[in-house]
Image 1 (cartoon, rainbow, N blue to C red):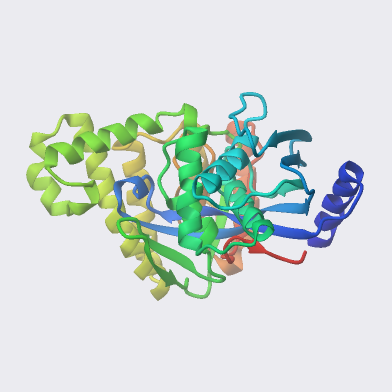
Image 2: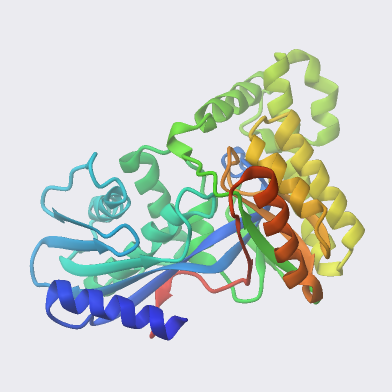
Amino acid sequence: MQVERRQHVMELFQNRFGSEPQLWARAPGRVDLMGSHTDYNLGYVLTLPISRDTWMAVRKNGSRTVNLHAANLNEDDCFSLDAIEKTSIKKWSNYIRGVASVLQAEGLQTDGFDAVIHSTVPLESGLSSSAALECVTAVVFRELGGWQMAPRAMATLCQRAENQFVGVNCGILDQFSSCLGEAECALLLDCSDLSTRAVRIASGISVVICNTMSPRKLSGSEYTLRRADCEQGAALLGVKSLCEMTVEGLAARRSILPEQVARRCEFIVAESARAESLARALQAGDRDSVARFCAESFAGARDLYEITSASMATMRKAMQEAPGVIGSRQAGAGFGGCMVAFVETARTDDFRAAVVESYLTASGLRPDVYQVEAVTGAALFVP
């Protein structure tokens, strides 16, 4: 598959730019195993940088222009590094333009280049296709500009590009996952100080993505409303962020909050604690606890944070009834997109077949179901 993908990208590059790329970079998508919406509340997230990634094949062109071809969309775009403006036409290009803009604001050299972009991260699915594009772009500018930057700093700059240039007020989770991935390990991220702990999942447990094929749009969703509720709750509780609260402490003071805000806070505080608990359970291979935490997370997302959808409920039923399932829950910000399941490794084929059949029958949509592995973060590579 990788050989075919490389050949496809190489042919596109030669056809459009008349030469071969001089370097290749890649950055992975991610799935949150536990921790929906906890990142911007400075809590814990258990994240897995996945073996679905975005490639960029590049050649420096000696100009101040960036020429782009997005293979998945069959679209071209270009912009000047001397006059970076947001575009309303090729919106995917804004993630690249935004990274260039924040790098220049930091005084870092940016050089023009020609590039073909190809991704196996599904778009608008909750697996961070935008962060993968931002992070692979940062790697390219770093290499062509000849400067160095630690992965944590690169992640925060890419987040700034999405917040300030693209206009999506996301937390750090997506960019951090894409920049700091470790092979064969999930990452337990403490968003209050960006510290991490590698979490090796016990043998015999696999992570399977189940795409509802119901696209989600973060910038057009109720994400900003949920964030505002959390900020209101923190202000009323007198804390910098909700995740300074314990489950017990919040319960004792719940009555001072408006009911909707209280429900949002209740979910976030419990979800952050579950991320830590799930990390321990996965390392120990404690399947009963994994199942319980996933069920609690999905119920909270549905009833307290209200980020599920009809397609997600249908998919979870299919996952929970499939052979080999240990636990399943939402992924990403919710409102459609992908979901995630923990499955007995020996039963992943049976699980996939059952989920596809059940979900197709119930929804009329054929889901994309596939196993993923943990991979390293954004970097140059040789395909």
